[in-house]
Amino acid sequence: MTRPAEGGASMQTTTEARWADQHDPRTCVVRDVTLGRDVRFWGFVNLYGCTIGDETRIGTFVEVQKGARIGARCKVSSHTFICEGVTIEDDVFVGHGVMFINDKRPRAVAVDGRPQTEADWTCVPTHVGRGASIGTGATILCGVRIGAGAMIGAGAVVTKDVAPGAVVAGNPARPLPAPAPVTTTATTTAQVPQFDLRRQASALRADLMAAIEQVVLDGAYALGPAVEGFEREFAALCGARHCVGVNSGTSALHLALLALGVGEGDEVITTPATFVATAWAISYCGARPVLVDVEEDTLCLDPAAVERALTPRTKAVVAVHLYGHPADASALRAVCDARGVPLLEDAAQAHGASVRGRPAGALGRAACFSFYPSKNLGACGEGGAIVTDDDALAAATRELRDHAQRVKGRHERLGFNYRMEGIQGAALGVKVRHLPRWNQRRREVARAYLAGLAGTPGLRLPVERPEVVHAWHQFVVRHPRRDDLRAALAARGVGTAIHYPTPVHLQPAYAHLGQGPGSLPVAERAAGEVLSLPMFPELTHDEVERVIAAVKDACR
Image 1 (tube, one colour):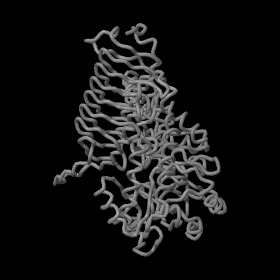
Image 2 (cartoon, helix red, strand yellow):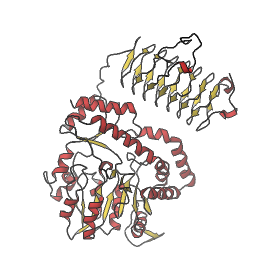
Image 3 (spheres, rainbow, N blue to C red):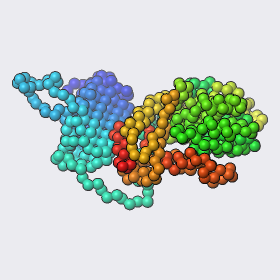
Image 4 (cartoon, one colour):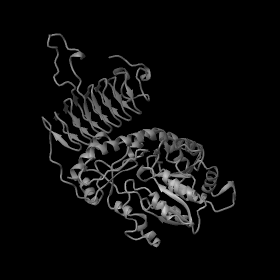
């Protein structure tokens, strides 16, 4: 065996490899390997031309050949052979002595009697899905797909595809009966979650911890350099001059409305198809939410309904970009401009969305974003921001968020403690650079759903208007028997959510508005039909395919 250069210098690595202390790197062959962060391997390994993800562990006497790819947080036990053409996704366990094969008809010599070379055979790829487990001594023949969460029994010989979540054993491997469900009062974790923030956190852990540590060392816990840096980056992403970081999306809406002059006795027009915080912010100002119906296809604010609801008391219109699809801002602006009423975007779900190339955040007088952890761009806690080109509005919201201090210690009006924390600014500063890539993956998942679920009986799919780039915060289908569909998907191991089951005008807190059942029929009908399928950037191909299959099966 040859010895790699000191410190692993011969490897092409993203971070320096860490050798287990009890083993000598001179016993290992490691050539042209791309390693993620904190990869560890023991002695007597032979790795060349492969890729290994963050925090993966490689046991002794393991060989990984060129072109093989191993994901993050995998455990590969000793005496295992992973050949060219094998792709192993994140969180996979590989037991001792597992053998992968990449040639359907291996031979020592060619038909003419000469020793075979690479030119004489075809590498057949094999794929192991996220979270699968492969038992000791198993043999995986080439060309198979092992689904996410599947379990391969010790000594099994896998000759054909294994479904996600299946348990197989034997030679050849055959499915075992599913275990009886365990009765419990706790919620069962879905095998395909509707949302899983842990995957993102794991991938960014080192960068997040370093950024947060810097805030602690600087002692800048409220506002400070990390918040200012994020504000600059996010303003640029939104194509705006100003970004004012605050402690939540609700606070952002509250301050923006105050800066627009909304107060006691005013009216603000908005949608009933939203999280109730949109209406809270209006009520906090002492104004009255005027709730009008939504468009049938996007469930965003209907410009015609807004026009009918305008009165001399209307002080603003708040348009929600629901599920990441921008509202019809050009039509809404035309209605608002004709009456001198400002348009405020509630862009809490639309980070990175756009209309005709113009980003969400630059479609009205100002825009308000939430950085709640589940958003496309989420903090490690609560956070929000106001984005605007209006210098006066930006100055007013900066003052109001910090106890209305223009000069420290001087308070000329009622202010608020709505400052963004330094730790949240640091976390968002790390994450904002990944937003374009994350949104691209969301679009890929959405395209797969749209193609795979087209024509499914009873199922209504979401739209993306031609002029729009959808942020796909949620992928929301509609079905007249939504609750039955949700139960059927849960039984098939697919998590879902409902955004939102009760329109704002039917919430008890807003009964005083006097808009009872039937007053806003489009929003009310949608509330009984909407169902959010799994949607987050870290969804694997196998998980997406499993969701599609489960929905089609449940809708038969």
